[in-house]
Length: 91
Image 1 (cartoon, rainbow, N blue to C red):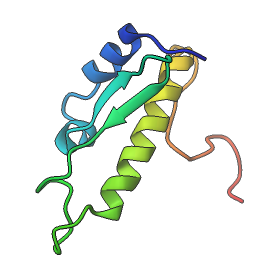
Image 2: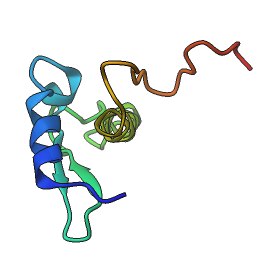
Image 3: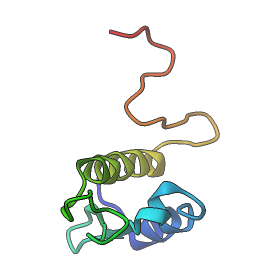
């Protein structure tokens, strides 16, 4: 699957008033059509010792995967909710 810049632009538009925006995550598409994201390592994403917080890293990974999935589905009929499996019993 190749992503387009238009899809990255849509993903960035959906960032408004979300954790993604607060953390400074920006979506883009690289020259090979891969959906990518960047996140600054600054006061928003540091842990108390001044290093990148593992939770911020997890938020970046979750946000990238969820947004890529949201761009690939028919949002009129389906929803992306992270790693949860809606409609399936917990394993």
